[in-house]
Length: 444
Image (cartoon, rainbow, N blue to C red; front, side, top):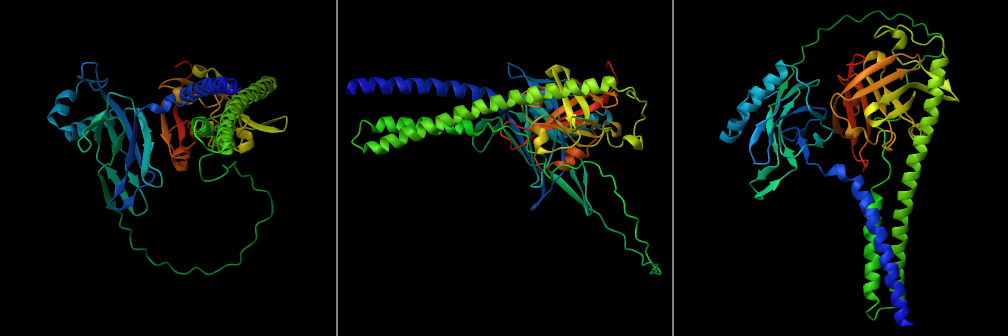
C-alpha cells in the first residue's frame, strides 16, 4: 500500500509541475516586453524635487557587434566616436542638442517627471542617447537642464560591473522670477448684484479623478500564486519523509494546491474577460458604423476649432453615448469610443478622456485587453491611426513615439503638443503606456 500511495503522489506531483511550467511560460511571455533596459531620471534642485519637467531623448549612436560606435542618422556628420572616446561628451551633447533644436527633430522618447521628481522609461540595448530637458516655468521660477548623453550598457565604477539600467540626475539650474510690485487701485463703489436666471449650464465630460484611470488587467498575482503554491507542495512532500505530524504535511500540500488552482482560475478569467471585451467592441462598432452610414447629415464641412465642435458630436445607440470609431491598421483594431470615461464603460470599449479631434488635443484611454490597447506599446513611429467621428468626418494621424509615464501625469497627458494621445496601463498596472500622435494628411 505504501508503494502504491508513493506512485500516486509522484504522478500527482508530475502533473502539477507540468501545469506550473505551462503557466510560467504563459506569464513569461506576457512579461517579455518588460525586460528591456530602463532609465530613471531624477530632477531636483538641492532638496527640492521638480515635478512636470519634460525630457526628450534622441538615439544618436549604436554599438555594433565588434564594439565600435556607429552614429545613427541624421547624426552622421558629428564625430560621435571620437568625442565619446576622448571624454568630451558635454561638448558633444551641447552641439547635438542645438542641431536637434534648429532642425526641429522629433525625439524618439519623451518623459515627464511625476510629483516625486522622477520619470522612468524603456531604452534599447547597445545605444547612446542624447537627453535634452525642456524648460519648466512655474509661478516663482524657471528650471532648465543641461543636455547630457547616456549609454546602454555602461560601466559602473563603484560596483565595477556592466549595467544596463540607467539612473540619471540632470544638472538643473533655477532662475527666480521677481514679481512686480502691485500698484494700489481705488476701491470701486459697490453696486447691487442681480442674481443670474436659473437654467442648466452644459459642461463637458470630466474624468473620474485627478489620476489617470486604472486600466490594467490583473496579471501580477499569477506568478506569485504559482511560486508560493509550488513551494508549499514541495515543502509538504519533503516533510513526508520526516517524522512530522500528518496534519502539517496535509495543510502544506492543501494550501499549495489552492494557490495553484487560484493561478489557473485567474488566468482563465483574464482570458475569458479579454474575449468578452473583444466581442462587445465588435458588436458596438458594427452598430456605430450602421448609424453613421444611415445618417443623411453626415460628412459636415467643419472648420478646425469651430466652437460648435469644441466637444465632439455625440450619438446615442442602445442607451450608450459614443463619439467616434478608432482604427489602428497595424494592430488590426476597429474600436468604438464612448463619450466619457467610466470604469464600467472601460470594461467594454475605449473611452474619451479629454479634448476633441477638432481642437487637436484628443485623448483616448482603454483597458490593456489584447483587443483594446494592450498592444499599442508595439506601435512605431509613422504608424497610421485614424478617427471617424459620429458625423462621418475622418481624422488621420501618424505615431510620433511611445512613452511610459507615471499614473499621476494627468497634465502631461491632457495638455500636450500632440494632436492625439492613446493611453493604457502597463502589464503590472503601476505605470501608463502613452502613444503620442501628430495629425497627418490622408494617404501620407
